[in-house]
Length: 96
Image 1 (cartoon, rainbow, N blue to C red):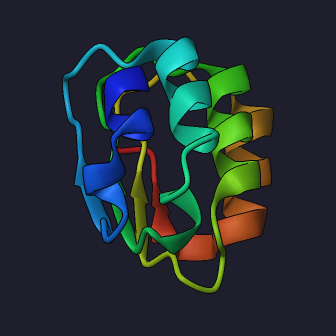
Image 2 (cartoon, rainbow, N blue to C red):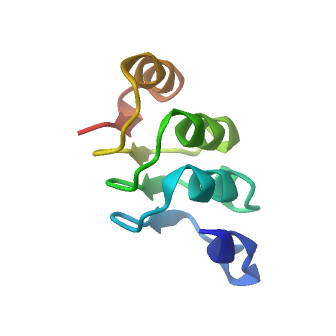
Protein backbone atom coordinates (compact mmCIF):
# COMPACT_ATOMS: atom_id res chain seq x y z
CA UNK A 1 0.00 0.00 0.00
CA UNK A 2 2.87 2.39 0.76
CA UNK A 3 4.40 1.90 -2.70
CA UNK A 4 1.04 2.33 -4.40
CA UNK A 5 0.27 5.46 -2.40
CA UNK A 6 3.58 7.07 -3.31
CA UNK A 7 3.47 6.23 -7.01
CA UNK A 8 2.94 9.12 -9.45
CA UNK A 9 1.17 6.63 -11.75
CA UNK A 10 -1.85 6.57 -9.45
CA UNK A 11 -2.78 10.22 -10.11
CA UNK A 12 -5.86 9.31 -12.17
CA UNK A 13 -6.90 6.32 -10.08
CA UNK A 14 -10.66 6.14 -9.40
CA UNK A 15 -11.10 2.48 -8.39
CA UNK A 16 -8.91 0.41 -6.10
CA UNK A 17 -9.21 -3.36 -5.69
CA UNK A 18 -6.89 -4.80 -3.03
CA UNK A 19 -8.91 -7.70 -1.65
CA UNK A 20 -6.89 -10.26 0.36
CA UNK A 21 -3.72 -8.17 0.06
CA UNK A 22 -2.79 -8.13 3.77
CA UNK A 23 -3.04 -4.32 3.87
CA UNK A 24 -3.67 -4.04 7.64
CA UNK A 25 -3.99 -0.81 9.60
CA UNK A 26 -0.60 0.52 8.51
CA UNK A 27 -1.44 0.03 4.84
CA UNK A 28 -4.85 1.65 5.32
CA UNK A 29 -3.13 4.65 6.91
CA UNK A 30 -0.73 4.80 3.94
CA UNK A 31 -3.68 4.80 1.56
CA UNK A 32 -5.38 7.53 3.63
CA UNK A 33 -2.32 9.76 3.10
CA UNK A 34 -2.23 9.21 -0.65
CA UNK A 35 -2.99 11.97 -3.13
CA UNK A 36 -5.62 9.89 -4.92
CA UNK A 37 -7.75 8.66 -2.01
CA UNK A 38 -10.20 11.56 -2.09
CA UNK A 39 -11.04 10.87 -5.74
CA UNK A 40 -11.77 7.16 -5.34
CA UNK A 41 -15.26 6.05 -6.25
CA UNK A 42 -14.88 2.34 -5.49
CA UNK A 43 -12.57 0.64 -3.00
CA UNK A 44 -12.40 -3.08 -2.27
CA UNK A 45 -10.29 -3.72 0.81
CA UNK A 46 -12.07 -6.89 1.84
CA UNK A 47 -10.23 -9.46 3.96
CA UNK A 48 -7.20 -7.30 4.76
CA UNK A 49 -6.90 -7.34 8.57
CA UNK A 50 -7.94 -3.67 8.68
CA UNK A 51 -9.11 -2.81 12.18
CA UNK A 52 -10.78 0.17 13.78
CA UNK A 53 -7.84 2.56 13.49
CA UNK A 54 -7.12 1.85 9.83
CA UNK A 55 -10.79 2.01 8.86
CA UNK A 56 -11.31 5.35 10.61
CA UNK A 57 -8.15 6.89 9.10
CA UNK A 58 -9.25 5.80 5.67
CA UNK A 59 -12.80 7.06 6.20
CA UNK A 60 -11.53 10.48 7.27
CA UNK A 61 -9.60 10.81 4.01
CA UNK A 62 -12.35 9.63 1.66
CA UNK A 63 -14.80 11.93 -0.08
CA UNK A 64 -18.36 11.01 0.83
CA UNK A 65 -19.48 12.79 -2.34
CA UNK A 66 -17.21 10.79 -4.66
CA UNK A 67 -17.44 7.37 -3.01
CA UNK A 68 -19.88 4.80 -4.40
CA UNK A 69 -18.59 1.61 -2.71
CA UNK A 70 -16.28 0.95 0.23
CA UNK A 71 -15.98 -2.81 0.75
CA UNK A 72 -14.55 -3.72 4.14
CA UNK A 73 -15.96 -7.26 4.24
CA UNK A 74 -14.05 -9.65 6.48
CA UNK A 75 -12.07 -7.03 8.40
CA UNK A 76 -12.05 -7.02 12.24
CA UNK A 77 -13.89 -3.72 12.73
CA UNK A 78 -15.89 -3.46 15.95
CA UNK A 79 -19.64 -2.71 15.78
CA UNK A 80 -19.34 0.84 17.15
CA UNK A 81 -16.86 1.72 14.37
CA UNK A 82 -19.04 0.03 11.78
CA UNK A 83 -21.89 2.27 12.91
CA UNK A 84 -19.69 5.35 12.52
CA UNK A 85 -18.69 4.27 9.02
CA UNK A 86 -22.32 3.57 8.11
CA UNK A 87 -23.30 7.01 9.42
CA UNK A 88 -20.69 8.61 7.15
CA UNK A 89 -21.24 6.51 4.01
CA UNK A 90 -24.66 4.90 4.37
CA UNK A 91 -25.26 1.81 2.30
CA UNK A 92 -22.12 2.51 0.27
CA UNK A 93 -20.02 0.76 2.94
CA UNK A 94 -20.09 -3.04 3.09
CA UNK A 95 -19.03 -5.29 5.92
CA UNK A 96 -20.19 -8.59 4.46
